[in-house]
Image 1 (cartoon, rainbow, N blue to C red):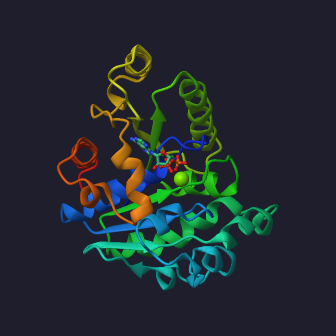
Image 2 (cartoon, rainbow, N blue to C red; image 1 turned 30 degrees about the vertical axis):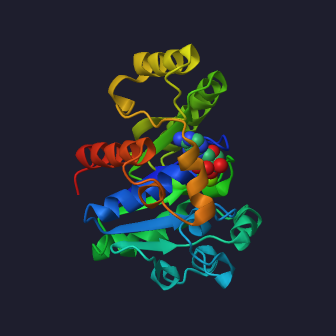
Length: 256
Ligand SMILES: Nc1ncnc2c1ncn2[C@@H]1O[C@H](COP(=O)(O)OP(=O)(O)O)[C@@H](O)[C@H]1O
Ligand SMILES: [Mg+2]
């Protein structure tokens, strides 16, 4: 099971949208996928039409060490299971503060699932903050995918997340963590701004930047409110095609 964490400490950059549409894209391609919603806001869970009031999340597992497999529920998609989030998760920051293994716990509760080889990929969606949830998800990951909005302030945020990734590698908690890629989101080809942000990222990060640019699309922003993925909400539209292309690039970069 290859573990990919989707992270950027900035909110509203497309983490959740990418988590949902990449996970479903992979499942549609026949891969066995576990989606871990690690944001107490639970947008990934509700965006997939999963009931977030059922009180299932990784909380107990993180706190008591109960198997994470007991928190897994099936989605309406074949091959796609989810560990949903709920507001309890926000308490983790306080509950685990000061414990020496705080950021290692997620990694250790994921290990039995890695060993079981039940899934090809695990995708972790994270909250827009630099707390324990995000650092745990980076510690547990093989690589990190960074969605980046095609705006200037996006670039500022990028240097910060890159710094955190290096800190996690150097601290020894996850020396093998790699940058799996940067995905440019909300691209508007009519503006010079979008083009120059993409050019800048390409210049500094080269191949790490995904070739696929996710366009700014009303259809993409509408889909979660219907509990639908972009593949269902606007099949054959530009958004669906872009996420399909991202899925293909992802599989090529991370063969299962
Ligand atoms: N490519 C896109 N085009 C237009 N709107 C988008 C796009 N991607 C995401 N959005 C919308 O932008 C908002 C933030 O996206 P989201 O994925 O929730 O970001 P994050 O998880 O990083 O906070 C949501 O309302 C979402 O529907
Ligand atoms: Mg989100």
